[in-house]
Amino acid sequence: MDGILNINKPQGETSFSIVAKVKRLIGERRVGHAGTLDPMATGVLPVCLGQGTRVVEFLADANKSYRAQIELGVTTDTYDATGRITAKKDSSGISQRQFETALNSFRGAIQQTPPMYSAIKYHGKPLYHLARAGLRVELQSRLIQVYRLELLDWRPPLASIEIECGKGTYVRSLAHDLGLTLGCGANLISLIRLRCGQFDIKDSITMSQLEGEFRHGYWHRFVYPIDIVLSHWMAVVVNDDTAMAIRNGRPVHLDNDTLPSSKARCRVYASDGRFLGIVQFNSEKGHWQPTKVLMKSV
Image (tube, rainbow, N blue to C red; front, side, top):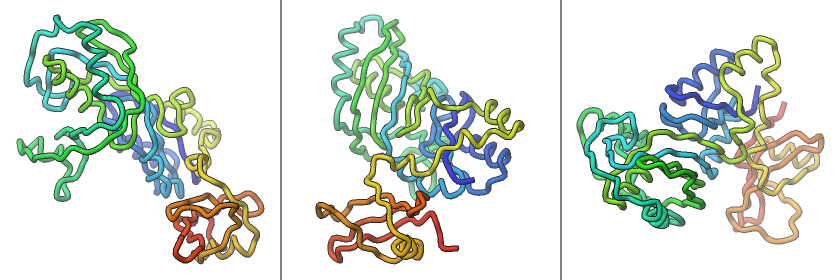
C-alpha cells in the first residue's frame, strides 16, 4: 500500500511509536512520519506508507497550524510542562493588552533559537541526549516564518493562541521567548497541531479508529494518494514514450508556454492517469530531469 494516513496523535505517544504501531498493524516495512510531534502534543501526524515515504520531505517543508496554551510566570528547562521548573515569577501584572503587544514581535520573519530538548542533531547526536546528560551547547538561531499569530483566550496566567508557521518553528521556543519578552517567563502546557500541509485535524483518524477499520477490512479508504502532497504544483500528462523515459530516469522535454525557473518542479502523470513522479527543470540544458520516480518500468 502506497499513500498517506492522516493520524490524530494522542497525548503521551511519540511520533516514532505511532509509526511502529502502523507498521505492525498493516504489515508495511516502509513507514515514516512527516513532522515530529512531542509526546505531550496531539493532532495531525501524516504517516507515509510504502512509496509515500518518498514525499516526506515535502510534507516536512509544508506550513503548519497549531493551537497552544501558554502558562505565564513559570519557566522550565524543556520550555514546556514536562520539564523541570527553573524559575517562577509573579505574572499578575501582565495585562491582555501587554500580551497582545508582545505577540507583535513574533509575527513575520523572525529569528528563533531551538530548545536544547529537541531532536536536532549536534555532531550526529540529538540535542535532547546532550541535555539529559547535563551538557549544554551554544545553539545558533535560525530564520523562521510566522504567518499568523492570534490570541484566542485570555485567562491569566493562561493564554491560548493559534499560530500558522513555516518549517522549523518550535512553538515551545515561541512560548519561552514570549515569557522573556514579558519579563515573567512562560512555558507551553498544551499543543494541538491543527494542520500540516493539506492535512487537517477535521479529517484525521485516531489509532483506535484505524485499528477498528483494519479489523473490518476498510482501512484503505483512509489512505490518501501520494500526489495530494504536491497538489499545488503544476501537473503534466505525458504520452507513453515520455512516460517510459521518465520511468527509466532519462531527461525529457515537456511543452511549456513560458520558460520555467531553474528550480521549477512538476508532477507527471501517465496517459492512464497514474502518478509517475516528480521532474525538475534544468535551465542549462533546457530539459526536465526526473528526481523521484514512483511508477517504475515493469
